[in-house]
Length: 164
Image 1 (cartoon, rainbow, N blue to C red):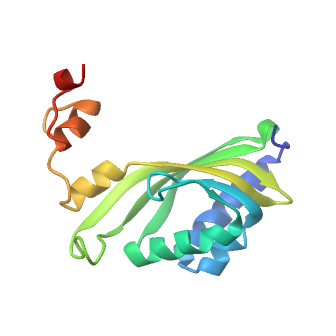
Image 2 (image 1 turned 90 degrees about the horizontal axis):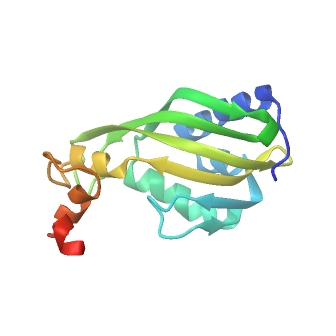
């Protein structure tokens, strides 16, 4: 179980976190991560990353794909007794150069801080809406009236009834 943290620490970390990402400075992001960080962002990256050493490629790739991405805090939720926090954010910017450099996106997501060790983030989980981002950039068709998995299945040319 993660060690308890103070409310001030969790809120302060969330502010430092967003400032580091908005700086577009890889070193600044890496310095607030524990060397043994467990990083789960399988929305963007193909696997879970274990350790700060594996993070450089991930962070650099973010800047490469979305060079002007920015993050605004919507609200930070804390659970000091559990040593956890969640930062609800809005991310926005232009599309990747190879996809839609003139198009813009604006979506919401959550940075979930699951554990801290020695004042550094040691366990992280990302959740954000990449499907809506891709629709805004013109890479996916409109959702129309399809709900839930029916939209995703339609992208594969399948209908929900075909999967039963």
